[in-house]
Each structure stands twice: as structure tokens, then as C-alpha cells.
Amino acid sequence: MTGRVTVTENALAALLALAAHEVPGVVGMAPAGLKDQVVRILGRQEASEGVVVRPDPTAPGKYQADFYVVVAVGVRIPTVVESLAERAAFAAERLAGVELSQVRVHVVGVGRG
Image 1 (cartoon, helix red, strand yellow):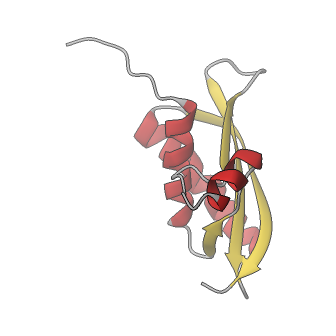
Image 2: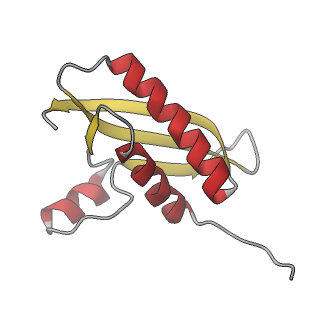
């Protein structure tokens, strides 16, 4: 059987958010923008919260991902960021068949987890 599989940006963002939760030292995701903030205020939470995915304008077929995370107190932030970037690239490629050209991790808070 032949065909084509298309992964939407929202589905990829949800997949990457789930992968981010698996990284030791990440205790949560922060709202990535106004939409996420409104959804949180309304009491709903989307799986893709804290992740923004967009096509890379300089590399057709590749995507850029921004993560907005809260890390645990006492962790070494550069290590957590590096682990998250590696986990995201792995999950995108192995689970969605998509290559990330750039991963940016924004540590927006520190909390207890």
C-alpha cells in the first residue's frame, strides 16, 4: 500500500511537548503565547502547551521548535536544555519522520517537581 502521511504542526507540537515531559529536570511547560494563556485561564490544557512549531523558511521540509519550560530547583539548566533538545530531535525524527533544523529552549521558571 502506498500513500503519504502528513503530520500537522499542532500534532508535532503535542508530540514534542510529551517528549519534553520525559526529560529529567523538566517539571512543566509554560504558556507559549496568548492562545496558551487563554486556554489555561479557561481551565483547559492542550497537549501542545509550551511548544511552538513552525516550518523553517530557510530549510524546506524542516521545522523549528520553541519550548517554554519550567525546570526543577537545583538542576543544572544547561544539561536539561541539551537533553531536551536531543530528545526533541529524536522524537521528531523517529516518531513523526520530521527533521528539526532548530530547537530553542526558553527556561521561563524554576519550580519544585
